[in-house]
Length: 319
Image (tube, rainbow, N blue to C red; front, side, top):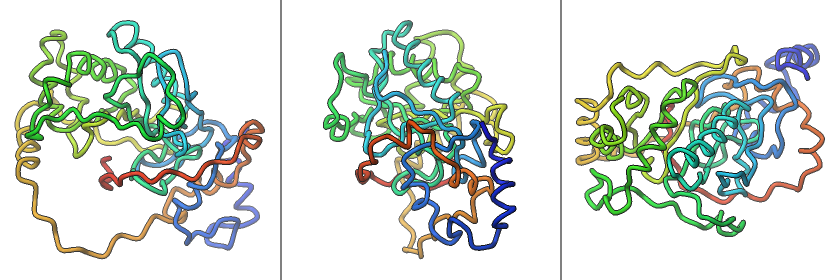
């Protein structure tokens, strides 16, 4: 199987960077990546940063597994770096076996070739991010219609500063602890109120609190938790995020976040929105990823459905 570097060299020999080529570098990259229905038949590689990159050799998470079901199938976002897909499968089976979790409902991972998305996330571009619903998998196979229309359940209480004790359980804490325990997991994003619940309840599920360092408070993330994997060894151009600060993150940082949630800053005057990323603004290897052939099985698959609109999330690079 060809590498991204080899294919890029062949492309540049015909159409150097900056020249007119198969893709117009001024077109929003989300339009180019959003319309591709299959992966790039290249050696697996996460390219660039979580919010500015693409994915070669992506692998599809099966829509049904022994301990998981993929949601929102029309978005075609159940693709990731093979190691991330393996990690999700491992989390699902081990949480079911050891933590009593019925199974995972898996939300967005990445598009077949990663890159910016038509709607929603700023990150999830390099196949190393996965959204896992806090709602456990039911004991039956969901229909396609249910996977599109079923709503995830928020863990927040009425004050938005704490979890709802009628919904939040120790099992939720255990599954986050398990995900954070994997060495390849870089961090996990949750709502500040959920971080607070984890800090307060960590001693109930074990004496080790080191895993809390990886659990990072952030806007949103009360319907799902966001697992982010570090750059794999096979991805030389992948850029890791800076390591979380030392400690369990249950002190001043968390207090500051809760204060921010309690009294959010006043909206600024509307400003001109940032223009969307173009192909020219992504790592140059992404040009080869878009140009690569798709595997025969992907080429022969049914046409992709029109994506269902999703609520936009925060667009900061941290997410």
